[in-house]
Length: 157
Image (cartoon, rainbow, N blue to C red; front, side, top):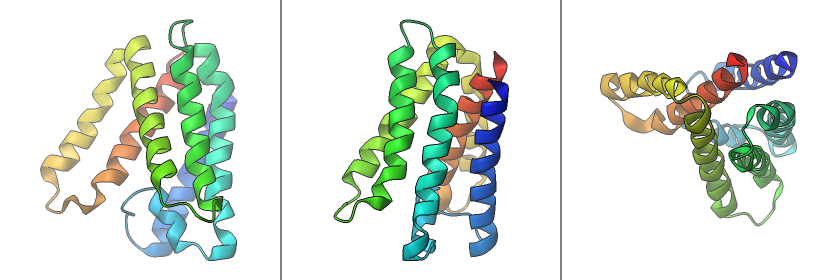
């Protein structure tokens, strides 16, 4: 199971790293990177999100307690739905925003109910927020904090 988590982490890290390298800056959010891809390349963002969701699914569902399995499920579905939104022609970001919020909240609640000490990773975000002069990259760091806690949760078992 650890191999699945490592592969998911490598996929998301390579994608985000490649997008930062390509644009020469930190994106406003991980999702906003889809807009820097050519129209024919938007599937890459979707493939990354689907792969991360699929690779984390068995791990999150196995690690969750019976009372928190629904949170693991909502996290997985949320990440997948975030990946699906660029493929929807008439999307107005409503589904994307709802999916991102569901994935973020469910993932952090899953961590809270199973390993609350991992939420201390949010202090990295708090430190960034206090040190930042410009809050334009704030959402990116929120997404990074969510991902860090989920990956830490998967590795801690």
